[in-house]
Image 1 (cartoon, one colour):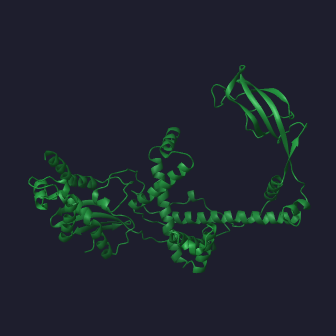
Image 2: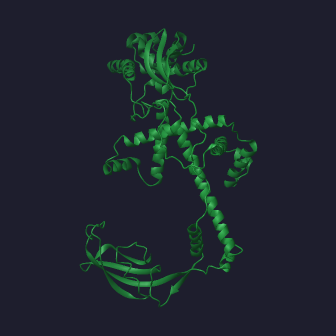
Image 3: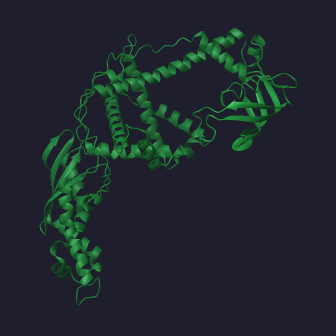
Length: 502
C-alpha cells in the first residue's frame, strides 16, 4: 500500500508507512538468524536456542530494531512506487508509532522535488556585451611582447641602475655580530622591486660588478622580527654581476620577427585578440549575473534535509581545496575564529548551507529553462566534444568509451552544451542597453526557507535511518528521534545485562 500522507507543504511531506505483519515477520526471521549466536540460553549451545525462547528470556522486542533494518528499504521502495511522490533525498525517520508482532507503523519525513514558477527572464538589464580595446590595452600588449623578446646584457663596468638585475653576496651585522637569516650568496634582485627593506636597494644603485662595500640601513619599526625591528644594521655587499634588459626596437622588423606583416598588422591583431578575450569575460560575467538574478527572483521552497545533504559535498570540496593549498581544515577554522571577530563556530556551517542552497536553486532553474527554451544537445555536438576530450587524453574515442567514467563525462558534456544554449537564449531576451542592477540591491523574492540554514551537528543515526544509508550530518536531532532511540535501545541494554549474568 502507498504512504498515508499527513502533511505536504513547502517541498516536505510527512507520511505514515505501515510495515505489514508478513513483512515484519520476514524481518524478524532475518534478525534472529543474524543475532542468534549472541544469546546464551541454558540448555542450548550458543546459536542453537529457538527464537521463542530467546524472546521469552530477553523480551519480545529483542529483535525489533534489526527486523526494521532488514525490511525497511523494501517496504519503503514499494510505497514509493505506489505513492507517485517525487522524493529527492533519503527519508528521515521521525518516530516509530507502533511496533509488535503484527507489524509496525512509522512516521517519515520526505524531501520532495520543489514545484515552482520560473521568475521573469525577459528584459533583464545586463549592460553592453561589447568591448573596444583602449590604447592602454594595446600598449600593454606591445610592452609584454617587447619584454618577452628582450635580451639580457651583462654589464662589465657600467654602474647599476633601477630596473637592472644584480646578483650579489651579502651578510648583515647587528652591533658587529652577524645575525641569523641575514646572509645569502649570489642573490638575484631586480633593483627597485621593493623586495628588501626601505633604503637597501637604493644603496645598491650606482655600483658596478666586482665591487665590495658596506651599506647601513635601519629595519622598520614594524618588522616581523622583534630582534631586528627598529635597529640599525650594516650589510657587507659583494657584487657578482649586473644584467640590463635591452628591449628590441618597436618597428616593422620586430613585428615581422614575431609573426606579423607590419607594426600596424600587429596592433590590429592585438586589438582583435584583446576584444575577443574581454568580450568572452564580459559574457561569462553576464551569464553568472543572469543566473544570480533568476535565483533572486524565483521563489523556491527547498527541503531543509536535502540542502543539508548537499552541503556535505560543499564542505568536502571546500576542505579538499584547503588541503590542496597546504592548510589543514581544522587548524584553518581555528585560526580564522581566533583572528576575526565576525567568524565563530557556526560561520562555515552557514556558508556551506547557503552555497548548497544556491547551487540547488541554480540547477533547478537551469532544468526549467532547458524545458522553456526546448534546448537539446545533438549527437553531432556531443560526439565532437567527446572526441575533443579523448584527444586531450591522447586516446581514440573508441578507447575512451571503454573508460569507467565515460558515461559521467558524456552526461557532463550534455549538461554543458544545454547550459550554453540556455544562456544564449537568455542573452537574446536580455536588455543590453541598460546597466545591471547589483544583485545585492535586488529584493530577495525567494520563498521562506526557515529551517534550511540550521547548524551542523554530527548526530548518530537510528538504525532504521542507517538502513537507508542516510546522511544526517547537518540535522539537529528531533525529540521524536531521541525518544525512538531510547525506546529501541532498551532491548540491547537488557541483552547486555543478561549476557553478563550468563
